[in-house]
Image 1: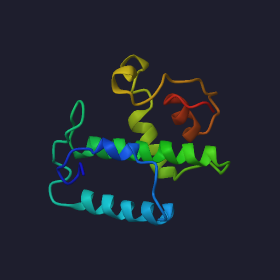
Image 2: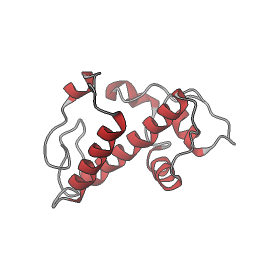
Image 3: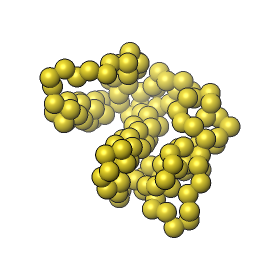
Image 4: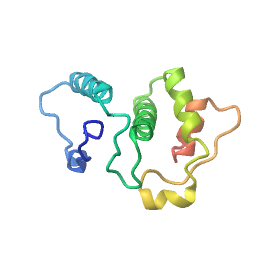
Length: 135
């Protein structure tokens, strides 16, 4: 929606049912739609209607962070390997780690306070701890 010039539809978050549709099929379809939207004319230059605003590249950074963190969440919750795509994890880490201080988090509602992670913790776990996950 954002890449196409629309606003976010937060009512979708409240929908807990997917009916008889397969989650993997829905995810694959939405991934194709997102990629097509970001490839559309003007998507990278468009001002996005989110709190604080931002142009396409900033919103793409946020989209990548969401995919990396929620992928980590799902892997953790289901007992799977939490190692994400190296390039995606490194890009999210480089953009966000250390750049989202605890002081501004309550105003955004985006995450809880950062939590400690040992220095030798894998990068995806460091990023997850930074965004309030327990590793």
